[in-house]
Image (cartoon, rainbow, N blue to C red; front, side):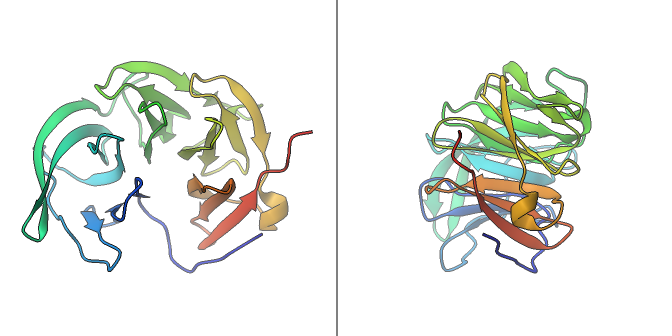
Length: 231
């Protein structure tokens, strides 16, 4: 199946089991939106030379992970609503930033909190994902630069399905690579039959019915596909 949208996806949005949606828009602002699109917060509550929120996700305990454009990641504790605004209590941890693997990033695009609450960062410039604990301890890489099975060119985002598998999108390669969180490569998916052409996926998600949603930035569309049953 295929659905289209004329909206250009430039940055990240996340929601975790509740009515609020966390959006890092292309202008570098963090927004927390209610279903009626009311914005609850406009500040971050962490210090930095040039804070520029680029991606965000919410952990199971309600902690907010925000990644700056530079790749610096901040874990923020939320204190709840204070009047019409969402109050950020304190910064609990900070890690990452520009540098080499492990622990450093080159032009990262998205981060994802997995079911086990570890953090997976799309390290686009290094051609792989890096996985961390909630405190920022490096655990392992997922994928590696290349074009063979499990190879990544410019990884952009990840999603996790109900079986715990990690699906990896790529800005250049048309394939979706599938891994275990530990980094073990499983197989590849090809969305081109459903898309009718190659894709340049900036983001993806897996819904409760197992459908895969891809944001194709350069063709300004959203693709919806279902993984075929394994033979």
